[in-house]
Image (cartoon, rainbow, N blue to C red; front, side, top):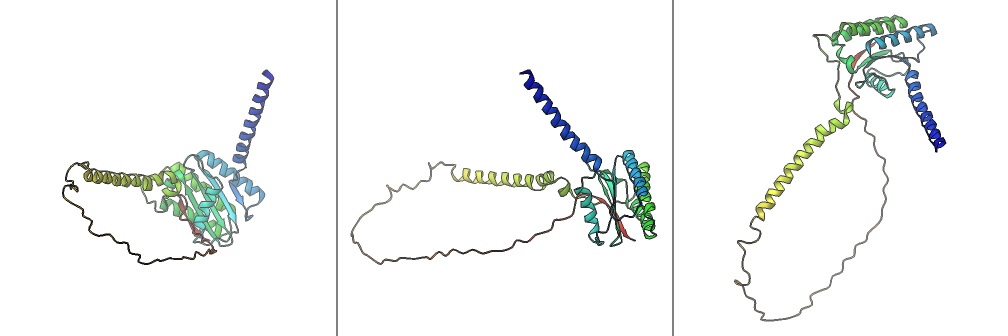
Length: 274
């Protein structure tokens, strides 16, 4: 019995080590710099990666730079960047706080997306200053400097704290996407319950009013007030009619259409051409 217990304990420990080992590997393997456009040398990639990691540790925000040749136009790059961040599991904490810079060399578009707490540190004024600075470096071909500028501006804004004034029109909130269950309950579940309760109450009141006498009053006495007298009896055959309906089986094929979804999860930021 003791041997069986030891074996089960060992197997359980091995399983837990495997599970947590996979989680650790996933977290460590998540890249903060994805230079698919090869804008940086190997040394520069190491330097920027280190800067991103240090800034992330200091701010508590995830920080990502993604360069590519995806050829995403200016009308789609915002949603593309936002979904890239979400789909690749970036973000720290329950709010998935973080910031990502997407540089598309094919379309010559750049876009910065802010998430979670970061959205409320970067007002419209701060956002424009950051974008202008990064755009100037990219337009001049100073890609390493553009990455440095992105990191430095983000850290500076963190150190300055949330702005006491300014506008935040760059922030787009989508509660339906962020909290689908809560959104459905608030916008569909609770109203449906209220309407259902009202209908049920009205139904009960109507039935109660209709049958409140329980059939004891205002009843017409049919036996006392009527009589029946049979004066003649005759059977007459009129006609015979048969209706036949033919049911045909048919199958029809058709393709279903795909409807694209709405906007992505809540985010802020902005972009520039360079």
